[in-house]
Each structure stands twice: as C-alpha cells, then as structure tokens.
Amino acid sequence: MKSRLYQKYVSEVQPSLLSSGRYQNVHQIPRMEKIVINMGVNSSLEKVAVDDAAKDLTAITGQKPVINKAKKSVANFKLRKGQSVGCRVTLRRDRMYEFFDRLVATALPRIRDFRGLSPRHFDGRGNYTLGIADQTIFPEIDLDKIKRHQGMDITIVTSAASDDDARDLLKRMGMPFAER
Image (cartoon, rainbow, N blue to C red):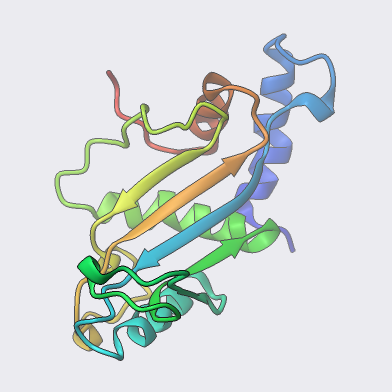
C-alpha cells in the first residue's frame, strides 16, 4: 500500500503541475528524490551522546542511521580522527513520503509560535534545507527518556531544475511556507 502523500502526488500534484503549462512531458515534472536527516553531536561531552542521537533518529525515521566519523584531527575543537561526530539517515521512496507526511502534518505544527517555514532556504538547485532545534517535536520521542535536547538538519532533495519549481512542488505537497 502506497502512502497517502504519494497517492496525493500522483492523483493531484502531477496533473496540476502538468496542466500549468510549464512542462510538456510527465517526466519533466519535478518530484522528491530523497530526504536526508543529519544530527551533529558534540561527542566530547559524553561518549553515549552519539548512541542516544542514533536511537532518537531511529525512532523518528524508522531506519537505522549511519554514524559519521571525523576525517581529520582538529586540535582547536578537541577533535580526533575517527571520533564519532554525528549520524545521518537517507530516506527514499515509501519511507520518504511517510516521513514527509509526519513532518508536515504533526511535527511542524508542534513548534511553538510556528508561522511557517522560510521560503528562502533553497540552495539554487531545487533542494530545501531546514533546521530543527529540538527533536521533541516528533511524537515518536518519549519526553521522559530524553537526556539532552538535540537539533537536526533536514534536506529535501528534488529533481526540480530551479528553486521556483521546487517551491511550487513542495507547496502543493503541503509544506507550510511563510508568506513574505
């Protein structure tokens, strides 16, 4: 069974983008390719900080994260080569649509004083990145078991050629952008 958001994309978003006149072919219509969630952790504080971040990221995404290691030593940051510095997950296909649906429908509205996402965080190639300061906005996280508050970066990679096309796609998919 395909996710609710994928069915919306196929039945509503694709035909409306095709009828807008900017695309001659169904294959030119932009689509979401993947979502990458990244949590950077200062592991010099505690050794289990990376494990706790990985456990939270597993609960949020339903997929085990990859632990990122430092590539070189930096003395000013008290960082050694091979030391764990964070974790990341790449979601594709069904898990991507399920996560995007939970992000838009349940997690983002739980942010205090939320007035919409900034429409200026596109990278020039149709990809959108947003930062979340606290992982507790996701309902999968048990607030009683949280040891430290951890932020994350979420990057939505689309096949759009420009930022305007990607913004239009994400807005039709339900992303709550703030009005200028």
